[in-house]
Picture (tube, rainbow, N blue to C red):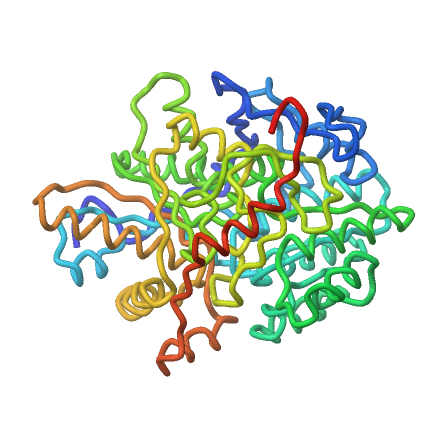
Length: 460
């Protein structure tokens, strides 16, 4: 091991960021405005108040402030589990025989096992400050639901979580953890909401989707006095909160005199990738040389690599504002595989715009078995069991490191290890037993999802 670079690179508690970085303030061109689902007119900030907390709605629409102060109450919560380490993957480098230098930002050192707690803390704090009774949300793999349950318990708010049905079946212990923190967890689609009943009537055997769960959570929130809906990915506000990951990572890499040539993140809705690359994307947006950014998504739900850049609903029930993003259509129901929280039909409008304009350089999709090949190797040599979502980034990092081996180049690679796979053992058992299905939707199946894209006169 090099004497210059330690295995783990830490920050002092005093170095935890005190401000979030807003990438939108440095973008040359903003993403297309959200549209009202009824009028198709650009939505106003106050029109979001019935759904989101007021401060969060303002953050969602903020495109001018580069840095936004993190309130002391949120900083206090962050100090429980931040800063998180950047780790040099020496053993993985050795196993691959690569000259590449591989680093990963590890966000799994908290009970939720993921990066989701960064935004959960912020969203619950603002709800508490507004005097709300409780919140509703959706969760796929369960990381967001767990993180939000922790934050609601800490700040003293009620929480109802609509968990994608197939994930609730695959991960019963995630449900148990959420309930331990006091949350009410409902498998989605459910009979508890009108939209859930409608989805079940049309697709009685569906395993559900994040789009379905979002619709149910919004219906409950808007119909319950003193409640609001919160989302764990996709939104500008979420990417803003997750910028603590990239801000910390950049400081840590500077401590060992490293600047990554490649930054890699798994991509479902965009929270992890957007957070990790934020500070480095700021360099590129302001005219400096930045890294080569790679988004990695499951081949079973390929919004960036095979989706359309179009206006779409963020939920299956079609009650949310319309967002212009890379999408498979809000009616797309993904395969019930182990991609977990990456099974969302669309991508963050902010990241979609960056990808469309060439700032987010590349998107790749990978099959399940290749993801778990990478996860297993990583676990054996680095001794951390990665979440299936995180393993998508590991797969791409390994592929890039092997390219360096072939070319002899010594590039610096940074990827996001979003969380641990301790609640994902059924997935690893299926992989070990050879039961994994590398499902890839056909063009005809994708067309079924695209057929649900809304027709907007004068736009699409």
